[in-house]
Length: 314
Image (cartoon, rainbow, N blue to C red; front, top):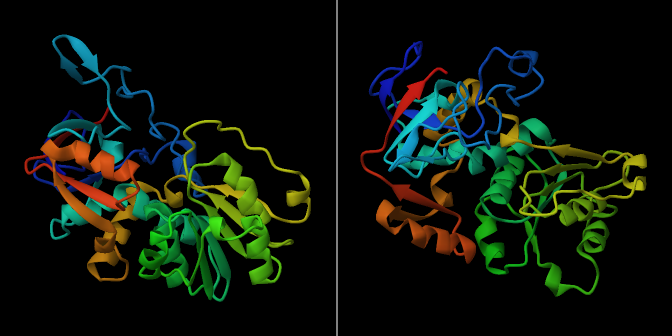
């Protein structure tokens, strides 16, 4: 996205800057931002209210009726208004139509592997769900030198696709009479070192925990559940030394960390292009949603030739 204008008090951006907009911001001043331990900003973290931070009002309307902001960025619009803490300046040489994937799924998966799990070389990794999130975790595990990266999905077509991102073995739960966690424990000799729940199904969190080994097995959950957000797991899973961690945006602080990911892409150190299965003009946006619901895409890039943003500090 390109900056169209800036509001009062915004000094780090100017008209014409290229930026990535992100759903979870970084004010760089709150306790969380300054702790060195978290990327969950107290001021701009995971905005769901649909309004601006300063006055709890929207900047969009039609016929006098408010139109609420979407995930702090309102990216399905030719023009948008974004808090400066939710914008990241990037090199004008980096193609926005590619690096836009770093605003969510690809960065979230890489960060879950690198920052949250801190995968060790030679380890065994199991990934539940092979959409963009799961395949980005696989890419991160491969780059960390994991020896086995096992992908689990009920869509058999994902097996072949996943190889390009580092998956070494593919399992379809429907192919076995045994619960998938038992299959994984059998083929790994007691469970994986790391498991990742990338589906957004809280029931799968227990399955992912059970797929890890005793003593040091680590499960990371990335998926956002559509319903039933409560998690139920037997305490014995933790008593035996397993750990469950949540991952928001892969632990990345957007303003501090995303420029380095863009640089890695420009140096061809990480894959992004391979996730883009469809390029779709804005007037056909519903086609992209239909592809997503049918599981027939990884990422659809919606093209709006004149997309611009006003950045405000309020």
